[in-house]
Length: 293
Image 1 (cartoon, rainbow, N blue to C red):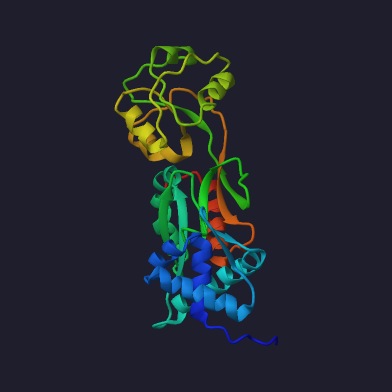
Image 2: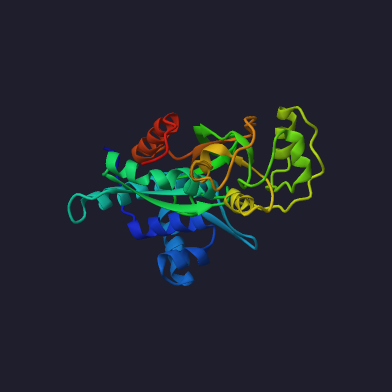
């Protein structure tokens, strides 16, 4: 067994939070101490280690090579300690899994199935926070994040959950018989400008000028479409409940797939057993096309 340095855990924890937050001020807020206390702990740790861990710049903290080497080790170690404490303090307890979830996937697919996950895996408690596909896993204290895209993010390891074929959805009283009929209606848009042109190309039609409102939420687009304000191009698996209830209808069979849903973790952090369990469960549930009970 290697020698274990006599370094206070509190100083190491302060370093991990400051590195993750990129700021002594934000670290002080998370730790519920003063900024001066954070600065003192970091200076003490640097003195004990004999290295500089941060460069203080006008733009904020920049980790040195030594800091970058130490950070992932401390992050993993403190995460492991926290998980074990959750399991042993006060007797047997569920493992807490903090997951950031893009809102469309959370409301349209995951949340309706949470009871099924809890029944199958009672030893894991999910804590969800939603985002609009922009998320910083380490800084937000997450174990992993579910995102939509092509699976390519800098510094991120992505694990495929399911594809998201898109098709026009609209209110039931809108009469659409062929793709060309869409030209007579308002086409609601997301921030991704390539979606409608790609769908029209798949349908064998040229895309008309797009002048409809732009929203950064598929949930918002679905609500507008259901109220008859236009036609939304949406990922079908995320809106099965609205289709089954008749609030939305699907006039065409044509779909286009421009992205998928992924479980993502930083490359320097290993995926925990609980995240692997969630990923396997979601993949299996995605194969079963029945709506959740």
